[in-house]
Image 1: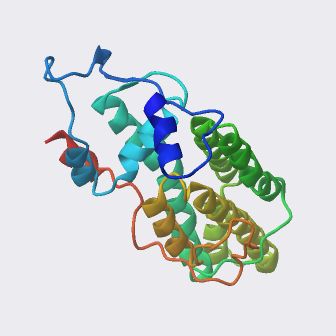
Image 2 (image 1 turned 180 degrees about the vertical axis):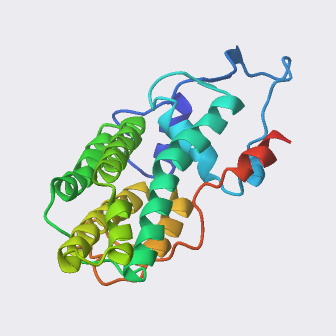
Length: 249
């Protein structure tokens, strides 16, 4: 620890009054060491998942910023499939696929709904987590919102209304189309907020999500967020499950 202060002094910089130090990381409950021969190569996992974001996500969310934590490849796999793929990737796929079918991929006007208001509060929650060095809390806030977004999407079941637009004749097409559009637009807006909030955590995946939503990556976090009228793309899949099998081999 004293060496850190000396480095600041040699560089002509003021010595910090406090230093943030993370805890120890164990592997499957055991201390990592040369004698134990249980080291793990992060490059192998990065290559297997074809992105550093799998490992970044696990370490940032499932190991507290200021405490000891345990790493497990099985839990990494569960985080990839159940959280990144199951909560975020699946929602993106469902929303953008239906948007492509019902509105040619173009996001309609965003409504002033409870879900939109909840999404708008998310950046502030993540900022507070960063200010207190609780990065795991920031990711928990993001995925707490995603849980609510998934629940709301399932509750409104816009795919049922979308089927009516093509199958039924004696219905108010304008009303149903507006309802489907509002549901999809609020989801796209929320996903855009999530994409922006994920930039410091999962930069590669966040950039892909921005591209899928048809919006540019913001240079500043306080830039206005506009999604209506932009063309989305449902071609690629975030966090594909087949990469898990590559990681096992």
